[in-house]
Length: 273
Image 1 (spheres, rainbow, N blue to C red):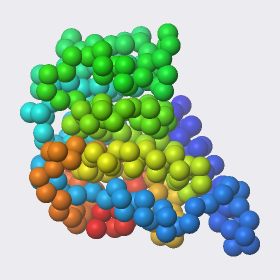
Image 2 (cartoon, helix red, strand yellow):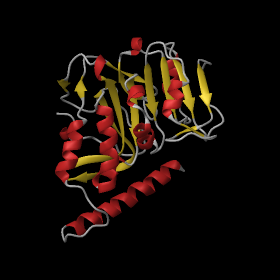
Image 3 (cartoon, rainbow, N blue to C red):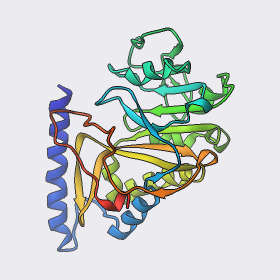
Image 4 (cartoon, helix red, strand yellow):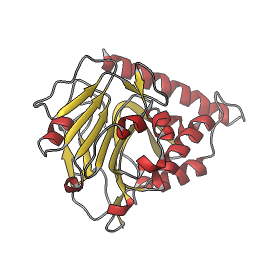
């Protein structure tokens, strides 16, 4: 059912963008567009670098698996908001004696291999009530001895959650994996502003270790630049960065398609070279 829904969304977006590009030639549009050069500059700000560490994969060879720099010796706590049917990432983290904290209002509990975790039946948001918690409150109420890893897949709420996070707590995070949904909205003026603000806040304290386009929901092309609808980015705290060397090729050998039935998405060189 989800695959059918994702196919429908992808086709609908392609249809809208196709007609929007035609209208643009006559100085009309379905939605206010952002200049291509501004988008290129934004992409340039999140280029991937070799930060001096081997990349390892945590989670399955497909959806729910992510590449991170091998700095797990710096981490003892993992926050993983958004509980799906696939918990391979969290299982791999727990095998390394890292405690996992999970939160999701929409499920009863996660299915994990051992009990080195705590589950909170709440969603992450920019406010706190009986059903919602902020990332600040979650971090502040958790004992952390070494460092924090965050893996965030919360279906579009990542923008409000990160914007609401204090910089004091942001700087405590060693590695942050964020699945940015609706990233193709960067071509619209309001989408660009929301995405730009979040990335600027993160990039004050983090470098980009890896980028992987999730092929769940398609992509669009703007002046030959590929823009995925869903983009997974791994950030490393600048204090851990050892070097910043250019990456010459993508995808990484440990990257795999999220959805096997869908065409893969390959980023052009503007993302990494």
